[in-house]
Each structure stands twice: as structure tokens, then as C-alpha cells.
Length: 512
Ligand code: GLA
Image 1 (cartoon, rainbow, N blue to C red):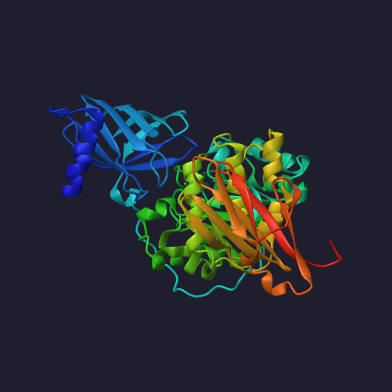
Image 2: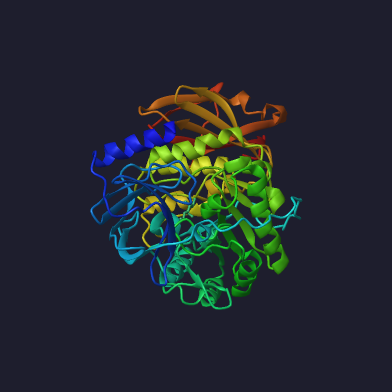
């Protein structure tokens, strides 16, 4: 009750107090907004006078409010998943007329669609829960022995992209040189699916008329291709998900030739509990379906780190799993996602990776220093390197970050040893990760707003044990130049939000 009252107060503050109730309608109940050949969004409304409270399927405690003045309905729903952004709302506007009426929806990118709002039975908005499999350990599919590398449509385009965009990104992945340095998979995120056909088969929407032809095209470029779905009935933006169709969809994706599935929890919040057991069961269900197809398909779990996925993700057949809420193209978001990983670095292993979300490098919201920090941190964490920018239009700086082969080599290094925080003081940190051979990567990070002098002692790098007959050699991986190994320690002035990333190795005397 107290929660309800504070939400009421929140909505009243947002929209102003409207003491006079709209007399004629009570919108309390379940509704769907549908666009022809588009997505479906279910809304649970509770009306109190002229105030409307909205709960969606997201299960997140976001304040979603609306008003009904006379017959004019206006709803505002915070848009950012998991991390509401007060400035960005999805809005619905309609003139209420009975239980079915035309409406417009403005999505988080400001795009307007026209559709219909219609009252639906509770069972349609909240389908009954189907049984989950008994939990067991699936066999390792042998894929993703190093952290996956590729491109995904979401960070740059949200669902505003089409078949041609994906083909263009495949072309650009090759022509820019990215495929030569390890990026090999193009992932089609939210926005490709439509309703099921008469045989219940999932289909592409008008912007994705032939998902098989798209896969064939991407393969013809020597690349792999990924697709996106959800254990819930809809993906986050309302397009079709795989709930109750897991086996058929896995089979369809395999028949079309897809090599990678990103499986996003989204509307599964409305079906299952977000407990480790339900999460694991739902992901295992699709993991089994994928393995049954016989096609090698990298399995990417996207559940925002819920239920400590790093403890059970591998059992579901998962090759990578999201450990955080969505990244945005700004320092605070990237810093939060990246540095929050340092407590769980012992979980990634060959074939099974922590995923603090995709790269924002090149999207324009951060400085070059900040993007170098992003890339360095992801590499030290052994995180998947999934670019999220327009690969056709990369500045030289963006290319130099995404295609820094020395930094990529750290990400892909096969030494199964986690990065460790060697030293922290205020906003300065030194992170060290052992690499193959007698080598380590050292990142000097300045998370503060002023330039800061940061250093470490050479003998603290755990290479000392190998020093009989050897000496140290160090390279600055962003300046691409050798660093003098002299004295007891190394220090550098690191710019605000910046990084100095070194590779230090022990080499035999006489071989330098
Ligand atoms: C969630 C995921 C994102 C993206 C969107 C698509 O927010 O975490 O990575 O897939 O859904 O709606």
C-alpha cells in the first residue's frame, strides 16, 4: 500500500494534481497495442481518477504513469531497460472509445507509429507458465574458445535498421579490415521478427523479408551471423519471442543458417520468476533446443546478470552471459558496467564468458580517452568484443581503437588467469592480468576528473620468479612504443578517464 501511495504521489507530481476523475471510462485491466506487421506491446493499466498507472512485462520497478482527461489518454513509460533515463519515455496517445481504438506510440528514439489499443483477457497478456526442464548440465558445445568478437545492431540502431543495413555492415566489416583482426560475427538484434505464420513458424518482418538469404549473404563474406530472441513471448520492444516455441525456433534459426543466438529475458519476467532456478531452466530449455539442431550455434544469454548467471550460465550451454544492465554511450554507464566486473573475474573460462555488454566505441558519446579505457578494460576482463557502431563511417581514431591488435591480443590471450586489482587509491587503479608466456598486461586507469600520476613497482608484477637470466621488456599498447624498464617502478601521468596499457614480458638476456 505504501508503495502504491508513493507511486501515486510520483505520478501526481509528474502530471500535476487532477482532482476531477474522468467520469466515463475505467481503463483498469489488460490492453495490447498492435501495429500491422509490427510488434505487440501489452500494458497493464490501473486507473485511479484521472491518473493511470502502467505496469509492463519488464518486471522492473519503473514509475510509469499516465492520465485520462475526458477521453484523451496519455501514457508515459520510462524507456531505458533496467536503468531508467528520466529524459526518455515511450508515450502512447489515444482518444478512448470503448475497448478498441486507434492510438499512436512514440518509441524511445522518437519514432511515431500508428496502431490500435485493444482490451485483452489477462491470459493473453500473461500467458500461463509452461513447465521448465529439470535442471542438468548440458555438454559444452566447444564454441567460443576465446571471447566472441563481432558487431551487433542494437547500440547504434536500436530497431531502426533493415536487411540492407546488416548487409552493409558485413561488407564494412571486411572492407575496414575488422575481419582481419578477429571480428567475425554480425548479430541482428531486436527488430527483425514479426508474427508467426499459419504454421506457427517465426517470420521476419517487412524490413527483413528473407532471413535465410541474409544469412547466406553474410556467410558469402566469410563471416558468421547471429539472431536474437527471448524466452518470453515478446522481445523487449514487442517483437515476437520464442516462448512455447523454443524447439521450432531453434530449428528455424538452424535451417536459416544462423551461427549465434542472443536470447534476451525481456517479457519472460511476466512468465517466470527471476530466480536462479527459473532463469537457469528457461535458458537450459533453449540451450537443449539449440543442441538438438546439431548446428554449432554460439549461445549468448542476456539476462542483465540476474541470478548470478556466472555461476550457472555454462550449464545451460551458454557461451557468454550478460553480467550487467544495458550499457549506454557515456562514461558513467561504461565505467559502471566495466569496473563492476572485477569481483567476478574468476568465472570466465574458455567457451564461457562474462559479458558486461557491447562496445560503444565510435558512437560519439565519449572521448577518445574514454573509449580507449572502454576497450582496454574489456580486453583485460576477457569480455566479448562486440562493436556497436556504424562500421561504414569510422574515424581514424575509432579504427585505431577497435583494431588495435595488441589490445585485442590481450582480450583473446588464452592464459586462463583472471585480471586482478593490484592497487587502488581514490579514483586510480592498477589492474594486472597474467598472459601466455612470461608476460602480463598492466592497465593504469584514472577514473577521476583530473589527470593523475599512477605507477607500480616492476617487481610487483609476479614476473620476478622468472627473472633468473632474464630481463623485462615493456610496450605501451596505445602509443605503440617501447617503455624503458629502469629503476624500481614505472609511473605515468594518466589523463582524466584515461588509461595507460602496457604489456610487460620477461625475455632472455641477449634476445632483446
Ligand atoms: C535489452 C538488451 C539489449 C538489447 C535490447 C533490445 O535491453 O539488454 O542488449 O538487446 O534489449 O530491446
